Every structure is written in C-alpha cells, then in structure tokens.
Amino acid sequence: MDFGATVVLAGLIVALLWLFREKSSKKYNLPPGPAALPLIGNLTKLDKNAPAKSFLKLSETYGPVMTVHLGWQRTVVLVGYDAVKEALVDQANDFTGRWSLPFLEKATDGYGLGISNGERWQQLRRFTLTTLRDFGMGRKGMEEWIQEESKHMRDCVESYKGAPFYPTSLLSRTVSNVICCIVFGQRFTYDDKQFLHLLNILSGILRFNSGLLGQLYNIFPWLMDRLPGPHHTFFAEIAEVRNFIKMKIKEHQETLDASSPRDYIDCFLIQMNQEKHNAKTEFHQDNLKSTLMNLFLAGTETTSSTIRYAISVLIKYPKIQERLQEEIDSVIGRGRSPNMEDRKSLSFTDAFIHEVQRFMDIVPFSLPHYALQDISFRGYTIPKGTVIIPLLHSVLREERYWANPMSFNPEHFLDQNGNFKKSPAFMPFSAGKRACVGESLARMELFLFLVSLLQHFTFSCPDGPDSINLVPEYSGFANVPRCHQIVAMPR
Image 1 (cartoon, rainbow, N blue to C red):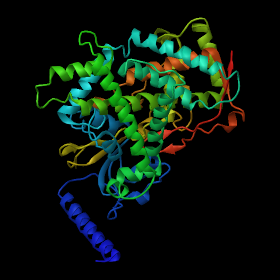
Image 2 (image 1 turned 45 degrees about the vertical axis):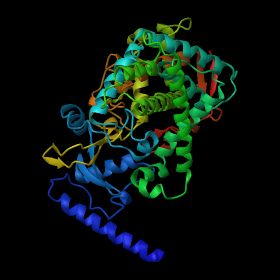
Image 3 (image 1 turned 90 degrees about the vertical axis):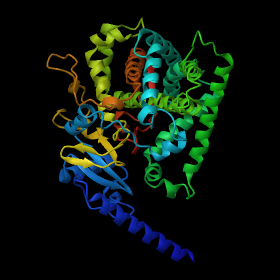
Image 4 (image 1 turned 120 degrees about the vertical axis):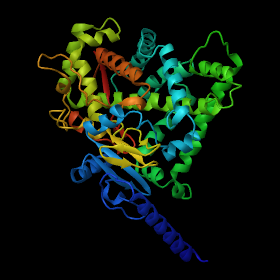
C-alpha cells in the first residue's frame, strides 16, 4: 500500500471513530457548544496567541458551561466566578480529577503529585502539605530563609551599579533557592553553572508549553512524538533535570539520619522505609522523583515570573512605584528587613501585589481537571473521560467583581478608607481541593522579595516607561511575561 492510500485509510478510520464517539456521546445531556470537525475539533475557533480570550468569546454564545473539542479531546469549559466556584468548591469531590496533560505525563512518566488522581494524589498531597508546613511554609522559619535570600538578591542587583540588566535569571535563582532549601536542604550560589543550566531548562519548559508547539503537543501527542521538532530536545533536557534529582536522592540515602530529617527528600525516604512492606504504597522512587520535579518547576517559574512582571509594572507606572516606596518607608524604613507582620500595615503594597497577580493571570486555564466518573452539573452531564477547564482568566476579568478588569488598578483591592479588602474572585492559585499546594509560600515570597527590592532600589528602563509591554510574550498553558532590560538605582 502506497503512502497516499495509507493516509486516506487512516483518515477514514479517524472519521469513523469520530462518528462513533459523537454517536455514543448523544446519550449524554452535554453542555452546549460549537459543532466540531473530525480530528481538529474546534481548534479553528481559537486564537493561538490568546486562547483564553477565544473561550470567553464562545461563552457569549454558549453560556458559562460549554463543550468544546480540542482536537479529539472533549472538553467542558467553566466560565465566570459562579460556575468555577460551584464546581471547584461547592462540588469539590466531583471535580478533584486532574487531566494527565500529555507533556507533563511524558516528563514525569505519569508519576508525582501534579497530575495524579485517586489514592496516589490524596497520599502525596497530604504528605507534601504536612512536610512543607513542618519545614516552615507559612511560618517564621520560612520567613527567615526568604529574608536571608533577599540579601543575596540585593547584593547581586547592587553589583550592576545602575547599569541595565535582564532580571530573569537572577529572579529565577533567588526564588528557586527557597524551594531548594525545602526539598534538597541546600541553596546554590548564583554562579553555580549546573544550577543555572537547570533553571534555563525549567524556564524553557514553561515557554514551550505556553507556545504553539506545546499546545499542539498536548492536543496531538501521538502525532507530535512522530514529527521532528524542538520538543524532542526539551524531553532530553528534562532527562537532565531528572538525573540531577536522582543524584540528590542518592546523596540523601547515603547520609540519611531517620531521627533528624533535613528536608523533603529525607522525610519521603523515611516514609518509604516505613511502608516498604506495603505492596500498594505510593511512597516509592518514581513518585519521589516526579514530585520533586513538580515542586522544583512550580516553586521556581511561577513566582519568579510574577516578580519579574511586577517590576515591569513598577517601571510602567512610576507614580505607583513612588507611592509604594512612600508607604514602605513610613512603616518599615530602610534599616531592617520586612516581615509578614508588616503586611497588615502596608495596605497599598498588599493591594499592588494582589493586582499584579490578577492582571498577570499566570495560569489562565488553571491546571485542567478531569471527569473520573460521570458528573451531574447544572442540569448537564459531564461524561467520564472529559477534560474540564476552570477558566481562571474569566474569573480574574469578570466585570461584576472588578471595576476596571482590563486595566491595572490596585484600587481593586482597597476599600473606601484605603484599607486592604479581599475579593472572592481572586483565584490565581485556583480553588478547592486541587488548589496550589505552595500558595502560602508563594504569597510570602512575593511580599518579602518585592518589599525588599522597593526598600533599596528604584526601577526604570533605558527606553522609558512607554517601552514596557505588559502583554504576555506567550499565552497558553501559562502567561509568560516579556523580559525587559531594567535599571535598578540604589536609593
């Protein structure tokens, strides 16, 4: 059979499978949505540069709960605060499933906390939350680690002596060292070449998944695995990260003192030993390696990207920067390090950080959920095997909760007396049982690092504030901010 005939036969098989799938789905009362084409589904209706906005546009026709097809994959999209909150919080048990995102599935061999479900997810999440808290997440001990890392960061910024520089690598090293202290029991010097290489790989993973090729891989993994392209290079680089993690685990095994655990790896190894006779245990090497990769990636890229975006906002709006510095000077001064207790007295600063997270919208789709069984929701049936996207972008841009959702405005988080006010629609970390495990750590890092920077530096850029572009460089799995050259003048 020649190549052309093979392609025709494959196309017929795909079309027949599609028709069978569509016929079998008729028995369900699915949420409404646009008609889908075989194989590519509704991809023609999505803007590859701003897919979240495309879903918002579709919801104007099909409502806040709609069915779309991303290639072959049937997907239910939840739009707006009410629908997202009703699913993730009010019906939390039904929506705990996590879609095994194909890129992450291959990168982690299907193990680890990030994309697991059922008993594996429950055990790993419970263990991880407990261990992170034991090592100070959200507490005084972690605060001191971040304060110490702030000094290293400031020393590095001062070394530029007011000359322009790109802050991406510095901020990645700063933030990553915090999670490294928790999971590996050590921080790395800013000139450690292996550390820098690993951080470059992590940064590349986020950019790839948010670009067109990454989106195509997650929709058509079976095809992309057979086509040449840079995605094969990424998987080879991910293997380097896994080898680094394996080396760290081996070092810990050789020096482990079960009576005095030093970090996350030690605690996991102790739990592994306690459950070594349990044939169904989830505490084994594969889950340890992949969970460490989850923590290393999530604990580095999301927070460092948010700080980088915040600096761009400070440069774009110098009046806001000036007001922040005035508030910080009046409450803390410049002679001591900020602490979390200061946040109560820094209402505008707290509002600014929250607005950065809202406006940046770093994970517009959240990490997609998955129907582990048929789900009844708002009179519809979401069939088992359906991907579910809680569109966080729609919550962070909903006019009902934000006076000017498309504009950057810290006043969104201030009451009429200038005091900080919470909003139920503030969901950058998602919500419910699968909300980000590192939320309290990220909040602490954002506050302490940004206040420390504003205490000691005034930020600008060589081409002036009008040159700052706050539109993401990539918008897909994550909104990846553009990298601008900055100037940090000591105050």
